[in-house]
Amino acid sequence: MRRRFGERIRKLTASMFLVTRALAEGVRIFAISIVISIVLGTGEIASIALIVLLTLFYTFEGGMTAVIWTDVVQMGLYLFGAVVSFFVILGQIPGGWAHVAAVAGAAHKFAIFDFRFSPTMAFFSRPYTFWAGLAGGCFLTTATHGTDQLMVQRLLSARNERQSRAALISSWVVIFFQFTLFLLIGLLLYVHYGDMGMPAPQQIDRIYPDFIWNHLPAGVAGLVVAAILAAAMANMSAALNSLASTTVVDFFRSRGTSDARLLRIARLATVAWGFVLLAMAIAARHSRSVLEAGLTIASIPSGMLLGVFLLGVLTKKPREGAAIAGVAAGLVAILYVRFRTPIAFTWYVLIGTTVTFGVALMASWFEGDAKE
Image (cartoon, rainbow, N blue to C red; front, top):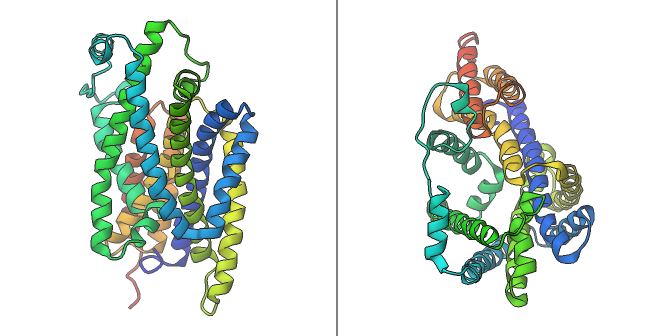
């Protein structure tokens, strides 16, 4: 961004990332505090503080090396625990998978695609349609995997560009597997709760951890809870590291600054962002759905980031003034869509990217020729 547009755009996009990541990560931390509060019987705030402090400790001490290696171990534990919970829950349902398929099929739970299309506000207000997934999901993934320091820092940790590409491309296999697995676990819980006549928890996000802790065998419950905590800590440690590195590189690093001084600043920034995430998580306690809240927050600025990145990669004429105009227009547009229309969050990145890129391109027509 600095090479293509200048220092102001670099700091603007860096600031957008910092704000976005802090808000979205706060929602994720609140989600994991639900599990801790069930297991330990602590309040939500105490649970949030516990998970933040534990993750902050090893991120502060180990940096990116600790993040990468703990991610590897925690991801393996997370997937193993999910597989174990799937088979244990299935074993508790009389009739097994045949009964699950019959009940879930009658309730249309296997309907994967919704191809209904009409250029109406009612259509754009439905978040989970084939078209929203195709367009919105494509743009959101491009933004998160192409402009987000959380992902970029991992790609830069590979030995070479070939390994980075291999990791990026192969990650979809793991993502597809884990999404399918948890959707199937959701089906099992739907059937089990219905068969037993059990009331769902008042807070819908508590269903899975509440069932694990109260209805699975002790050893299995501990394993699955550990897996969930591992996944959350892996994501949070990566977020802390990316927030700290972005803060140092984009706002504190200058020519002549020693590596020792930058390391001290990075560690202080890690601690500071840890307390920011603590505050964000406490504020997120009133979210209706932690999944949708996190995705909505991430989607609001992602369109502007992707729009200005595409502007820098795909065009040559637009300069700093046009890029700033595009970002400002994208922000106004997406805030209007969020608060004044019923349009679903799955369309936010597409809208933000289109407005940012389009306005910046038009604004470039009024810029003078670049000085050689």
